[in-house]
Amino acid sequence: MKKLLFVLMLLPFFATAQESYDLIDFSDDLSAKIIVDDDQENSDLETNCTLNIYQKKSGKLIFCKPALYSEYDIEDSKVKSNIKQIPYGEQSILIYEDFNFDGKEDIALRTGNYGCYDGPSFEIYLADKNGFVYNESFTELGSNYCGMFTVDDEKKQLQTMTKSGCCWHQFATYVVENNQAVPIEIVEESYSGIFAEYSVQKRINGKMVKSGYQKFAEGNEPEFTMVFENGKKMYLMEIYGDEHLGYIFTNSEDVVELFIDADFTFNKATQTLTFNNKSTIYEVSSKEIVVKDNGKTYHLNKIKETAGSFNNLKWNTFSNVQTK
Image (cartoon, rainbow, N blue to C red; front, side, top):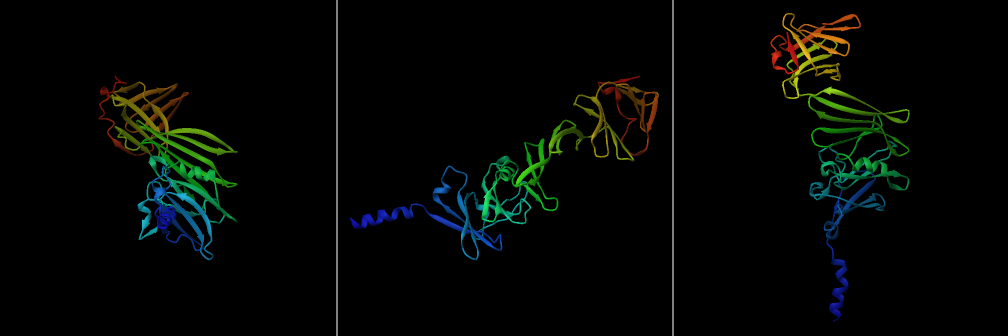
């Protein structure tokens, strides 16, 4: 009977099997280990271990939080740290870096896979004189995007990226004010047909001001292209996939300045394509673009190069081109 009681008293101590792994050195002053037990790995929580951080000199425990590790974190029976391959590469359980630019290293602790496409997500703890303090603003940047954020020490800025499918991306830039991440620019890009659409928010006098523009997307195959000496470009191409002609004029950064998909007239005798944009008349030939506006005529003929053959275009195959 006494032997049975002794065994029952010992059961709580052996109810869960624990393993511990030291972190590969991430700091001159601190050491760390993760502790894994069966209860954590079989729980409904996404975290599956506990990360402890100690003062190297005294051995004092200064940080203890639940975390998420995977088999990829283990290397030679130790846990890797300070790996941050953004956006889609390996990102370790612990990233030790100065996030708020105060000269002290902070902690990013992987606690789940809540980032985009089930990517890693991190809780952020900022260093202070008493240890490390959880910061909700930085944690939002480390949890709701594609993995950890980027730290630009030179500009003292943080950057995040997220996406949805192939055709929508968001890039955001932040500065740090009173240990809060404050956005100064948010750029969203989406792809629709021949254009990339950009929505831009910039912080001006404390407020986010929104603007937008279009770019001629890569991968398009124009029928005819003019490249001017100043870097501007003109494209004639089939659009909408139904033998419909489009005229696109961009600046040197491929931002669309004019897009016409209405009615065109091709003059066989003069070999010119003509269209109107409100009261302005455009005449396009293989050698120049003539613009007539308010009684004035402008010749855009400083051409650096062309691609395709203007004169060999089959104008009568386009549904919105009238030939005469």
